[in-house]
Length: 142
Ligand SMILES: [Zn+2]
Image 1 (cartoon, rainbow, N blue to C red):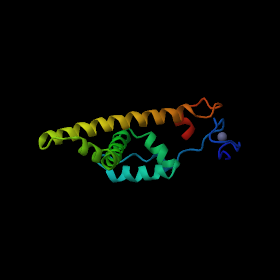
Image 2: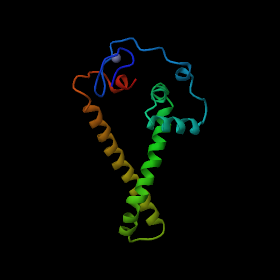
Image 3: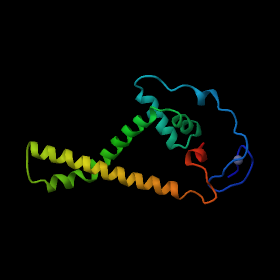
Image 4: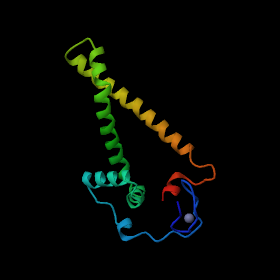
């Protein structure tokens, strides 16, 4: 790839020594106030498409972590319902409130395990940055 700022050819990332262009009005617009899940869902889909503006906007928005955590919990719960819940129900040999409590505790443990695995996965991604790059990941993505 070629850097749009300094013109240098690079592989996956590089530490740019050029002066970054000024952010646009779209990028610096303040995030919406109050409860706005639609905005953050749209931002999440734009991040999935590697939209640079969405990535930089979310990096400056302190509320984005809560919406992101909620989206992660929903996605992980869907995965657990599809994979672990049938096995959990087959393993639990009680009925009534005890089964419900067992499923809730099992799902919480499952979410914790998936959270740890996700943390390890993201940690390995951060460790495996190119060796010539000493910048923090957010500086490389910006
Ligand atoms: Zn550059």
